[in-house]
Image 1 (cartoon, rainbow over the protein chains, first blue to last red):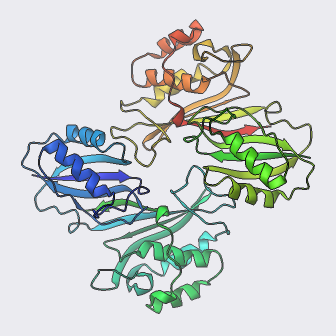
Image 2 (image 1 turned 45 degrees about the vertical axis):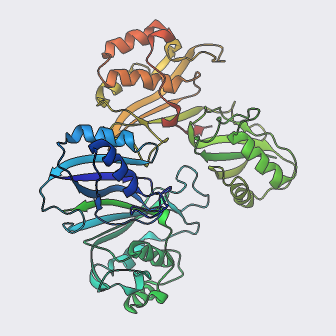
Image 3 (image 1 turned 60 degrees about the vertical axis):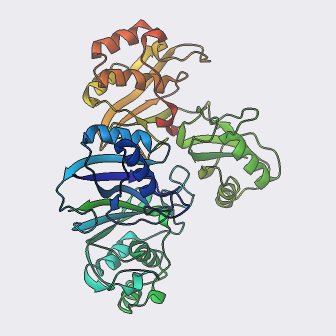
Length: 244
Length: 244
């Protein structure tokens, strides 16, 4: 039987989703909890990796087991077993064997939070990117819209990206101000390495007036990472949900 | 010259607002930063104490100095000096000598956040009270409304309260559900010790069905702390703002 987990975590103390020798990862913490609960070793397949410091409200993963599972009780057990790690299993459901957390995904949604205030965050430390200079979210939104559709996104692709092609389709992207924050939401089937953080870094150049919208467009069309803005920090990024 | 500070903090690592021998407090951290910035010792007068773990988005405090102050630069300095403590000075303004952070206050606003989900918080650890059993926010709101006006609030008054009288006037109180959270907002000129947390603890009894609304009313009218609900945990409470 295959089960699908929906997982929330605070990325701050982890090297990221993926297991890494000698480091603390979300995957390893959950696999250990599953092994304790099910009494056999479990491989958890995530819908995608997240970097050190990146948060999740809706990471998805699947695992297989022959052990009879009461999904309700298993969730309670896992949430007790992972403590004090800041991980929470929001939901567990049984899925067909054809379901694959990574390969069945039709769309992934990310949120990037920027606190745009003169004063630094206190309560939102490690939860937002603090950006001091005033940002024009309407210009950022105009620039962002240029990216919608299927494009070569080499300008926003980090070194070490394992994707075969720099061509990706962005389904939706929006920039809006909510109170003291600028929120950037991006939806796509899949993403290049650091794509969201690199897009946000370039949008912020537009927002603070360092770049015009046409500077942004030129950088994007150059298909050259060295033409893009800086990489926005990991701790403003949230993996929100996966659509199957 | 007298200056008014508006202060945000994550209450988790502090013994509270107030200085205490051998413990880490918000007041002490800010007084040290002020002393470094102004080169003389400073007494910071807060609008009210907060307990260990209680957060603030809009604590207010004042101090006096003869040193010429550029409020904009002082804010930048203080925010650099208090690091890595999770404190942020949101605003500094010059005020008349008649202004007193505590005694001039006309109204204080508190917010209490309850995460009402089967799964525990991960990203909101230490930021919300996690309450597993489903809460009926409409019943909680009906019960809360009974408290509006001037009443003897002994049922919600903790031992050790230094107020002369248990009579307090609640200006506004509301309970509403926003997504996965129940938010309780209370506004009053002043509060008894643990008043908000004790009110929330009793409202939750109504919300989860342990008490009817008339049970709540009887407990309130008994003017007896032993008749009230449990004290809600500190880490769900936010000191939001002060009106002068």
